Image (cartoon, rainbow, N blue to C red; front, side):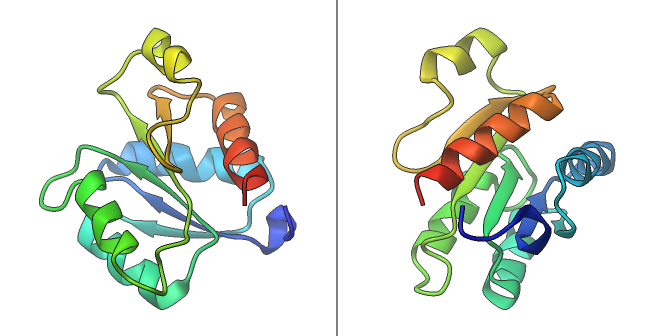
Length: 131
C-alpha cells in the first residue's frame, strides 16, 4: 500500500444509516481518517468522480442504483475505472463468503454482513495489496 491509512480516502456506500455508522466506526478503528459517505449508488458515482477515493466499500442491494450498477458506471468512466471496490452484503452467508475466498469475478471483493473489524481489515489489505 503506497499511502498510509491516515492519508487514504475511503468512500463508504450504504443506504442503511445504522450500517453506514457501523462501517464508518470500523474504518475509524482501522486508522482511516478521510471517510466519505454516500447513501445510494448515484450519490456514490458522483462523489467518486468528484473526490477520487482510493477505495470504495459498498452495499450491493440499494434502492435506485444498486452496487452492481454503480460499479458499471465507475468502470465506464476513465477517472474512476481503477478504484477498487469491496462489496458488503447480507445476500450471501458467511460460508458462501469463504467459498469465494472473498474475491468475486474481476477485482471486486465480497464481505458478508454482519461483518467484523477483522473481516473488513482483511478485505482492505487483500484488495490494496493487489494495487
